[in-house]
Length: 477
Image (cartoon, rainbow, N blue to C red):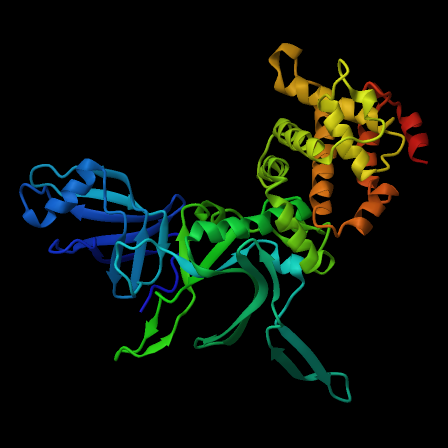
């Protein structure tokens, strides 16, 4: 048996096993809080009650066993990378209480020694945006009508299509659908529930630590953050390995099931609000446009472009951010991307003291994309200097006061768009997408922001000037 689900606010009482021979089991309570998995252990002073001597030692020395097992009436849970989280000392005859926080909690036991580290061959994740981005479903339905056009038959077929598979380093990655049916009823109504979701899966030839799986999953989710332009969270992880077995009472193997794993690395994401369809909006590219070749290209170029990807995705995927943070992180990303792109024709106009400058690296990105900004932006050189100037004034205190908030807001929006398009281009599948921006057909919202604030970038020096409403109207006509 295993604990099927552990959600925020749930708790399970059981006996805690430390894997050390001859030490007695102790009572403990398993909980899931917004800080992660927590095991609370009540105990008495070890010098007074020998039964709790080892527990007293855990908390006095702040060194609980690395791996532990909890057996409850509902099933077992195994904990890895256990750390001291806090305790109230047991003094005299009073009862003490200690808290342990594991790096990983597996809601099942394993058929190996408790001292063995957790390694698994396969891992599945559910995350925001996967259903919306992939457009995959396991459900097909067809309604049949009678002669009076009333629906009298509904045929529902549930069948998962073939997974989409590609290689990502040593890991085989898959995107596939998963469905689950459940019927429930009470004294009043009967309900048939059909859950139809998309999973991201990784599989290795041999067992690996969960962290290795998460790294590969994160690469895919970082691409989705760029394509959606919003924060996305992991919601659930399930793992499978030959050491995780489901057996009959007689010991006969039934299967090696997928079981839930809760990681301290992602549990705070699970607590974040789920984005609505409106918040997700329209991704720059969907799975069918990216394809297997695009996913492979993204994976192959990821390490080389990491200095571009990580600062940009960190701020795009952050909730409740400051616009200055957007400018800082995206400008750092553009600087890294510009160095990778290399020299571009006409970049000499952005040099400082005869050498490439911050504006040069930004110009390379802008020239590479070739976006047609319209009359609100004088030139790519002017925009590159405006971005560089704003970045330096935000970053360096010796450059005086912070720049005007309107300028910073608009630079932040431009930077965010540019890094998202650069990330999409790394898939090799963004030619049609970029063509829409090169023709200017996707820029009307940004142009209206300039018009509403009555400003424009007026020259190659990146100078901001005011545009009266009448002049702004002429620029858009």
